[in-house]
Image 1 (cartoon, rainbow, N blue to C red):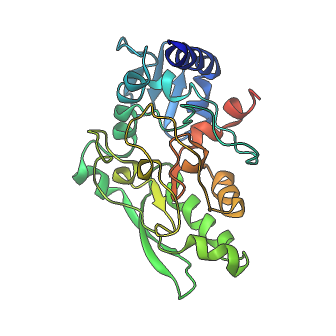
Image 2 (tube, rainbow, N blue to C red; image 1 turned 120 degrees about the vertical axis):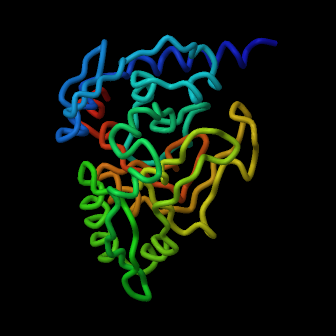
Image 3 (cartoon, rainbow, N blue to C red; image 1 turned 90 degrees about the horizontal axis):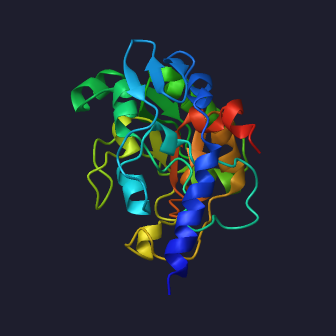
Amino acid sequence: MRLLPIFAASALLLTHLWANPQCYVDGYPTLVASADKDSVVLKNGVTFPYRTDASKSTWEERINHADLETQLSQRYDAGGFDTPPAYLFDPGRLRYQPFFQALYGKDKKTIEKNLVTIAWPSLKGSIKLQVTKVGGADRALYAIGQEIAALPKSDRIWAEGAATYCYRVIKDTDRLSMHSFGIAIDLAPSKTQYWKDEASSETAHIGYKNTMPLSIVRIFEKHGWIWGGRWYHYDTMHFEYRPELLASSCQGNK
């Protein structure tokens, strides 16, 4: 039977249609000068090809060798959550690492020069978190914390146990975690869900699980942070600063 490969290939072809390079300009107005189907140019002059020659015919190739087009190929839906994500639907999880290194720092030393400390409200008092100041990620996370602090306690408990910067690779890969750039936060790690607790293969069929309330999620999305709970490979504790996926030029394709 070849139904699975055919289905996966069809899904990859359809998601390709969502890509819109203008999302980079709109998402990072202080960092990206221009973007089109050929290239993305940062304001410091660094230029990236919008599409690379690396093969992306399989899911493993797409996640390991994503380019800037692939990064936008699945439209992030910041709406409700009536149904679980479709098979291999991971908007924001396909990342072109050189782009983030150019924005936030090429190595640990450079990244850490851009880190600042913000106050994050918890039920036992404010805690300190490190986040990058590049592109206003720190201001966005601070604003998120202030809005979460106004929620009922039953929701606020899901914003406890916060962890941000940690220079490391993603488990079982050689790709840098977004925590390495100071643009990610994990919440309630002991009460949330991660797909690798169910399966290890990227193409395995897994069942969706989540306990993170949407009241928390929507506050993050309002400020340009996406949620790992909207991925087929769910990581429901995880949020990361990805304003290009929430820019009007990408959300307007609905």
